[in-house]
Length: 433
Image 1 (tube, one colour):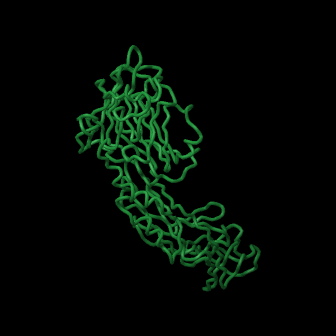
Image 2 (cartoon, one colour):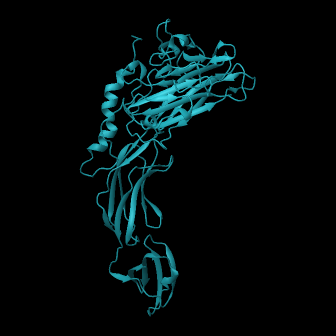
Image 3 (spheres, rainbow, N blue to C red):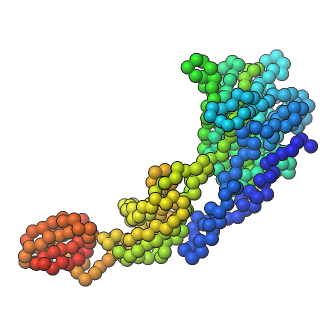
């Protein structure tokens, strides 16, 4: 038995949540699926357990709770690598309320051979004396809660504070490394080099994020903390169930490289969930120009929270990609957007969606609707040569004067739309096609 773990506290509830289907579209009369999506609070944005490295095991093992190093490695060479290369540190990232970070380091094995520091939410497999070997890797054991990290939701990015202090910068290998993989219920392996990857293993990955990074110095030449943010990439990954996440840190990006004494400080791992805008179906799918349209929306703030007070717009777009904001609401959580289809809308196919313009978030759903032009008692598609006597004044539907004169109105000189023509104290609504 390794120790008391905390990641399994969340496992059952998170995985139960993950097993449900989240629907971005729903009908006006059945909004329950949308409500289900936003009703969960504490488990909505799951994080890596002990992400601030405040909790540690006994001095004998000296690993952060829910994290692992060489002290809990397995494999045929595990007895040779169980040497301490990790401890807690009081050197923490700026502006934190925490008091501890994790520091891992590189050590000499013998001669010029080094063993780099390694920290993982999985388990280290020491299977070969040669560092750059497929038998040396980090892996997940979903049957042992000490060596797996349940997730259940799909994060968009991962952020972490690091301070890399190389003893000596090697030109051929100057970088430390962080990587994270979201995967399904499988004992996923993180190989040290991409050429070791197998199709079977990769088939269980949902997305992956990684970064090789150098140490950063201040103006006095001292190494300082830096915050890294890495988006998860889904390209080339086929799995869809974000059941688990594996996070790894190494004092060098290439196995067996580095200098004894290279140190990597790690603090506050954070999974980022982008804000999400969810919209329900419009009140109906076919409209006449001038009809009312109503759409319900909900803006999820994400994690960290979106700044409150963001407007939400209801946008109508025609077949030529011309967009019109029908309605803007300052509600930033849950509400209805009611508007009117423009009086001068032409017959055709349109799309309607909800957009939060400040951050550029658009709803997952884009709804197709049909609009019929509003032809009323008046003239539909008037001819420019129409012989009418007397003076006239032409106004837009919103009351802006756009033309005046005597005789016939030259509608070919005006954009398509609905106009009000005043002649001899009589007003006629005209649809100019």
